[in-house]
Image (tube, rainbow, N blue to C red; front, side, top):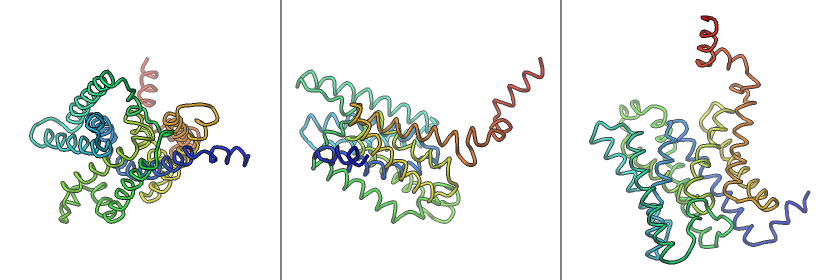
Length: 297
């Protein structure tokens, strides 16, 4: 058992990958908790897809890809807010328009760059955590530290704003600045996670650990801590599975996180499909309508 645990650690690339995975698991779970309580999962999806053209342009110019990704995510955030505030288009539609356009542009740019330079840039889409360098690890740590520090400093304001925007505005909190700030934190978190799981899978790490914790606890700070535990466990377990079974690392991490969510969904103390079947049968509108339809026949 101990031999299996320590065997991957003899390789420096696995050491760097595990540290990267742990950092990503922590920061994604913390930021994802805000997405969960505000029901903004689509926002995370929009920003994660919108960073792709920034990545491609930064790579083409030889600049820092993290900076390019963050700038693209910031521009997409501003566009979403602009469309939402200056038209009758709803927020979800604005997100769909922006992220699909940015994602299509990113795919086009990557295709053109690959044709010109004869290189494979698919790791932008699916991640390449085993290829993490010391510089990548440093950049991820810096970005994650900034995100966690900002959340620590403004925890009370973000908490109040997340659960009661009208009340936050009434007591004088800068709601629009908090809204923009949260979007920027999401963008930074996505940038920090790119090497681990890529653009396509990063939403899972943002949402799934927090959603798992949401099923298990009732307080927000508990949700953060449990989500961090789920994120870190998923990251480490996924890395070990990828090492011993020759699986792609990013998808392995996401599959572990998804498996933990399924377990929580089935066995949650208060909301479990198996542990609380009575609440499911009596509380599900679909189940009630099916029973009513059957009785009316």
